[in-house]
Length: 282
Image (cartoon, rainbow, N blue to C red; front, top):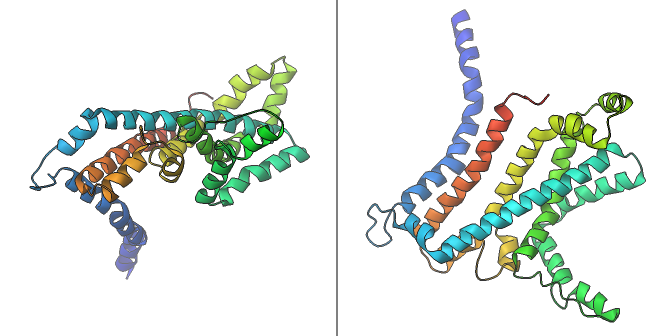
């Protein structure tokens, strides 16, 4: 009886995680393996080939698309972290009515459907939109020229990602002890010293984590680039859609899926390393 109880205790944890393990195999591992296999097959003969990958890394149009995607994603990460950190700092160290309003506005975009938000932004920033009409009513001409450009994509991405980054960074700022800041000020530390010596060493890991999530959510995005992006260059999410639905080239679509997966995996690796690394800044 005792032996049976010991076996149950030994195997019970594995049985508990078994459903989640099979779910991961079904929803993640199987699609990735299937896409990888398809990407290594010739469209006509189904023989092994690297031509599908060769196409994306040698064709100038596709190289422009990859570079354009990385530019938009990286700029979104940098600006989202910068403005998100500024927003989180204000919320953390100000306890007034305005800061509470900012918190509410920060949470609000999470409840607005992405498609609705993009269409609303298009009505505001397009030439002849709300901003242009306001300028016209004031007696001058103003065209934002944000449609079908990288600047427009980055701006809309920031609308989604600044609040998200701010909330993540705000969680880490909660670990900054007020007593530490007051002690530093008592011995003559200015605001920049407090920021560099106390706040950043406590929150730097969250920067990498927030950056990884923002990068993953934008490098393969589809809705915003499809509605607001231009025809050349294009974001990889739109290129993947066209390869699959318009050109019906499933092998190239699979190769691009693997490329996007690898790009996201890079940020996922950063996330894992940062979480496992011991804090050396403290």
